[in-house]
Image 1 (cartoon, rainbow, N blue to C red):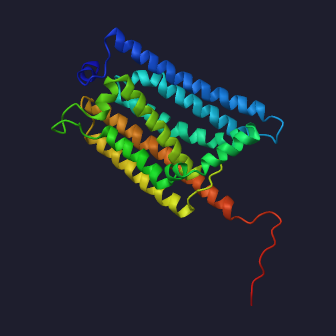
Image 2 (spheres, rainbow, N blue to C red):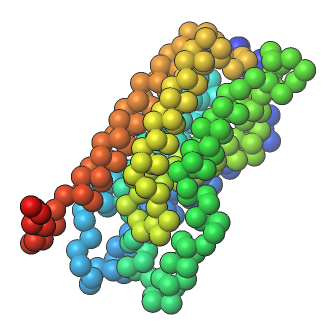
Image 3 (tube, rainbow, N blue to C red):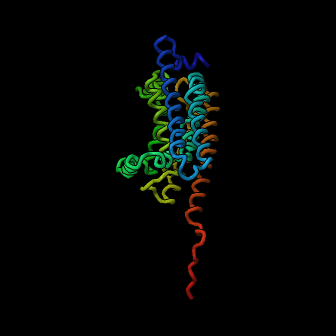
Length: 283
């Protein structure tokens, strides 16, 4: 397996390469630690307000753990194993974003920030750029489109050339960082656009979000099936088959959770409010 991946540029041998990858891993884990610390500080700052739901806190720190695993030991294993790479993809691009979204960090920030800063954050949420990026269709295209670009054919004269983004990612620490940052941010924005718990002044209708989610599930499943028979250059066929199954079934598990949360959100929005007076039937 090592020989196969080495031929695709997945193994880094020079001291400079090792330093670059170690620096990348350290920076990524430091960013995860900062995110955990900021959430804890916000909890402490807003402690005198109404109680913050424990479930949100647990979801946030569970998401932090998933991201740390994906950026640490699993990221190292992914240089030699496509299956490990796919486990990291699920953790960083799907499960961690879902858990972090359920942690409602923007809501917590609005509780913890001074009034002027909270108003500035609210204005940012209403800006045209945020409105465009967080629309479910745009978020889905950024998410699914990035994955198809990552695992698509090479960029050379023929589809078999080892010049695809997947190979470049494993040969360059900078490309690796950019790709993983995109996977995480696209996953977070997409998840937030579908089942976000934070304030969203431009939230799309339930019908739009449901349609986009169904389309995304189909595209994600199609990509997993494609990878089963057409893995990226340099990836062992058996490893590709196991990895694509991880992507297919693991992605389904997260997608089903999204569907359940979307349904629960619809139920909560349409059920009668306590104390509401029912409308009398007309005769």
